[in-house]
Image (cartoon, rainbow over all chains, first blue to last red; front, side):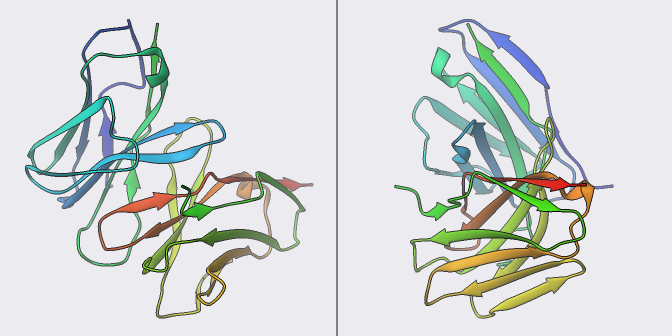
Length: 114
Length: 111
């Protein structure tokens, strides 16, 4: 059974803290993604990676960075958390370069920044 | 600037009837389109996709239609079932790697 796992389902942090969200997939997928989901805004792409150590900005990268040192792991980093980063964060993975097939999503991490 | 638009925030359909969810896009370079379904407190689940070289793709009760000239696609669910009640996201990719989502449409299947 294929899986995308995220390190936490719920997380509460304080403003200014450095936050790490971890995502691991066991499908040997090349592509990995980080989205955030907010009411009325749908899923917005923060960053994606198409290979180890490779990354590209999505539509809303400001305030975030990512790391992909191993193929199975894609980390989202909030350098200094702010209240407007309170959101549901979703990680996904996908076979790369196929032009087809959907992403597999993790269950999400609901982050609250106080 | 929103490249993938789902203009109906919600839709209610009687059980057993057809559900039609619509999606418009602005980027003519999109070459692949996908539909996802999402239940509360879960990640989205991939449903069906279509390449820009096709105009229809069918998988069981789900059919996606693509009208490239109108930059419009739709998802048809026939017949609609109670378990289809969820939020449906339309998504598109310009190349193989980057996938952009719409805001979603909440589908309610009425008994």
